[in-house]
Image (cartoon, rainbow, N blue to C red; front, side, top):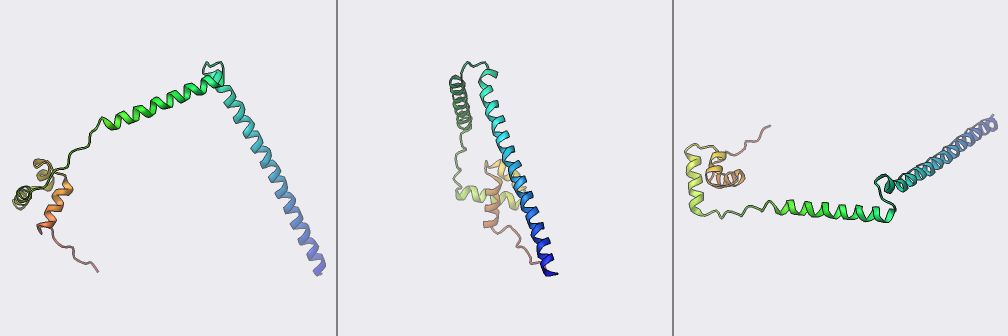
Length: 136
């Protein structure tokens, strides 16, 4: 009985290996087909865009990509970075006084040409922030 089980297991394994081999063969055929399709599509590109040969097409693509890169660089330089504001003790005192008077932090930031984060940091340093309580 054990020998017949071994034969049936062997035939099952053999059929699965044959299946795997067939799938691998089909996969390789699909890869080759995709490669051929891509190659023919790439060969047709220059003619589709009115170029007589691939060299002039490649040159035009390179020139177009160079001009796109230079355009991106120009847009970065169009927005100069804002100069850092030096926070003097007078500015700190003014911010703290406005906050103690009940002004909203965003309004204080806008009126003093500061960022909201800077105002929040000044507020925290002045002890105007309530400490968090641990929740259980």
